[in-house]
Length: 359
Image 1 (cartoon, rainbow, N blue to C red):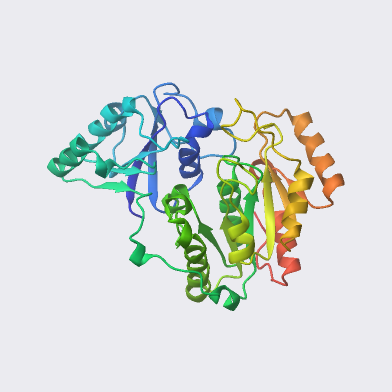
Image 2: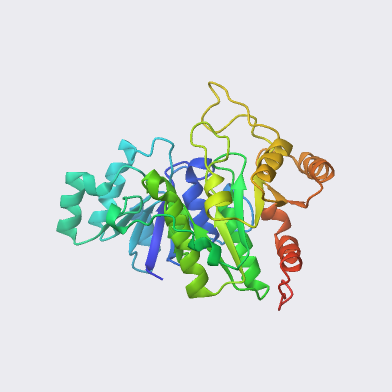
């Protein structure tokens, strides 16, 4: 573990913009999360804001309040927000400066880099703290080309894909990996986004910070390294965006270059249009057509996982029953149903022995 941390959500804790914070809240091996900084939800119970089974992490209105209330030294200040523009909002720059002046290193997962902001760089140098820009691209000399070595990997590789961006692919991927390990299977997650790195996963790369020509090579390198070094029984690969999202189509790399053996497909029934295209708008194709498209790549969809945001309990049950009847595969809501049934299905399919009963 790198150290203790507080996470900024700046009034957006209950929105999709705080998906980085949501991932950290649900569990990270890299940081000990001590508090959330959000003036809008200060003093509220975290589970009442984000829902689900989450730890009791306090929410404070400011860095100053957090420092007064917490006994531990705070090592890191994490910007727990993600925006489609990737820019650092001007209104949070003073908060970043306050964190630096309080002796915290700053972790930034946005496309705009703190190390490109002279005033921030100078302040960090004076205060002897680090600026960690996770999405800073690697030098091309450090990147890998696709070689075909993926064919050496005998471990089942499951791609967690989705019908859109920002619908919970990473959360489901993390839950599958965690649950498999709790059930006695050696499982690893290949991260492909900044939050996956923050969670402490050992293998992966940040897809949207990688030069396009090297994406397939970096994906292959991560999977092959994981296979050789960790000897897992299951490998779960975190998907990005969706196969037909016009803003950023993604997914074929996992099916073709990483040679996925199966797909877990994440879907959000309450979302009608692709994220950030609502003004155009561009409708998300049917779930059945997405499954058929994946089959055209030669890969089987093993199960559907659903994001229940925006649904009543009755609506959620109706969608679950309808999709199961229509598609003939298991359908679960990971945050409420859990994913142990899916691990059991994969264990049976790939002839893996579950050593422990899930508790």
